[in-house]
Amino acid sequence: YLLTVDKTTTPAALARPMREEYVYESPPLPPDEDVYSEKIPAAVELLISYLEVAGLSTDDLFGGDPTVRELNDVIGSLSSGRTRDVAAVCRGSAQLAAASLAAYIRSLPEPLVGPPHYEALCAAVDIEPYGERVASVRDTLGGMPESTQTVLHRLFRFLSTLASRSAARGNSAEALAQVWTAMITPTYERGRALLRNEFRLVGLLLQQYACIFEGSLDAYEAPELPLPATLAGGGGNWVRTKASLLRDSQGRFKIQVREDECGIYLDVIAPTDVADDRGQLRERDYLVTLQRRKVEQLTLPQVRNLIRDAGSILEMEVRRYVTSASAASEADRAAAAERQQREAAQLERYQQQVQQQMAAPPPQAAPLFEPDEPAPPSHHAASQQPSPASQPPPPSAVRYASRQALSFERLPTAAAKPPASERGRSGTPPSSAPSSDLLGLDLLSGPPVPAAAPAPPAAIALGSRALYRSQTVTVTAIHRDDPSGDYYTVKFPSGELRDVDGPLHPLPPHPPTPSADPPAGWASDLFGGGGGGGGGGTQTGTGMSAAKLDAETEELKRARRAPREPRPLLRRTPAAPTSRLPPASR
Image 1 (cartoon, rainbow, N blue to C red):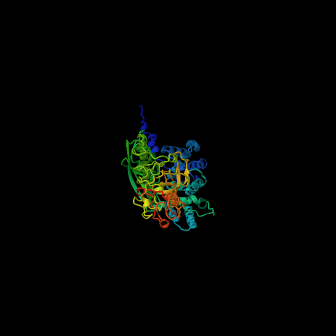
Image 2 (cartoon, rainbow, N blue to C red; image 1 turned 135 degrees about the vertical axis):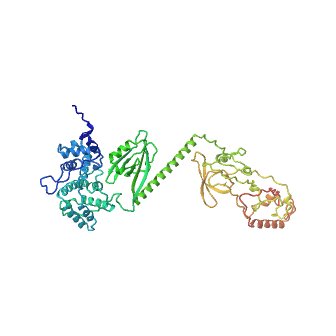
Image 3 (cartoon, rainbow, N blue to C red; image 1 turned 120 degrees about the horizontal axis):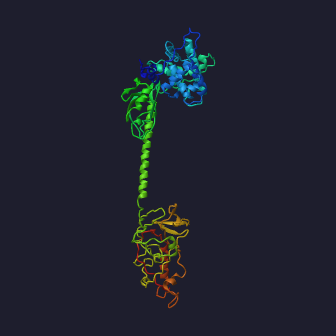
């Protein structure tokens, strides 16, 4: 008879799923009565010896994530004695050797720090005097089995060396304490106070290794290691969040999961090219449900297979330990993201406006002057082509475009001023009525003398007077270094100096102040001829006596010495000029 053997029912085939999903249980440590066996398992000694050489320069030594099958292969090869070459078994990977060491210690039948010494060690870290605390931990460890003390001694000697001498990232005392607290303590459910004391105990073993395990007397007080976020106080609590992730254009969810003593968590959340809920997730968020299945009932390989075999949508629920400090930082992060989004929107609107302005046709330049108004002459033209002083300004206001494209208000129309020769010598406005200066002399009715031609206005020069915006100013400097035109430094009546480039209308210089006494020969100029001709020595040519003429002269002098009323600079009401006195002789 031929016997057919089903290969799927062989012991090797039955053991294959367990080999790929569960780490084999490590053999127990030898009891104290067995004096011939090794106190430290061969696999532990070989792995630690290899890591003391190759692990000090490896970043995040215990952060590797090998498969369960790789761990079982390494532990089985070293425990069976088939080989002692750790580098060959681990293929030169220090992280695989470190993960195998942690898996072997974790898979022991009894934890290294377990009952009945577990409670005593957790209570010892609460002792207030630091020296008594270290002594209590040392004495409690001294009551453990010899094999347990030996393994702890060998393990923490390596971990203490790694924390103090390694220059690589991720090998600090805080990181090592967080990893190895779950490896040497019990696996059953415990309260937060015990979990906090476990971390403090492992930190104390790392800091005071020489005093606790080797009996060194050179103990020093060191500050406790900071508690991780999951164990720190501050009124924190666990917050649950639901999210749905979508596959990207390449069919990937782009997340990675790992496992620690608190469960399976999200280690990497990479950005993607689709819109989903990954913005609500954070790294180190622990999975509660995945595809509506409880994660606590699944192993890490099963979780990864579930993610791999999911459809286009991956539904999950995570929990996150949130403290007051983390909540504040989360609020700050949200505010910063909102501010960045607002600034990006403002920048986008500004770029759109710039593009619209560049695409729009250039605006037509408006004329500098109105069509019905002549352009004001330039300062050079005004200085080279003088206009009559009696010519009034243009009837409508002039808009003058300066270098800064400023528009000035319209100036009120000013009437032409009569020349100085036509104004009364007393400074009062002339009138069409006969003057009272000569008290009704018959000579006022003589024929008028034609007015002399007005003098040309003075050009804009240093020290000259000009009209600027209805104010009389004095030009103190002329600047010709500007390509767009000349500008001037003027002094206002208040004493203020200012640079202007607006229109300056030149004003005539101040008239000479008349003398109190009439000039010599004024009578002959006024009445014509000399004295004594055609009559007697006591009468003028018209029959006026000398006494009467002297009286009139004195009256005229007194009128000229009288105070003058102030005359306005602008807005003078024009008046008809009076005729000059006819010439007469005494």
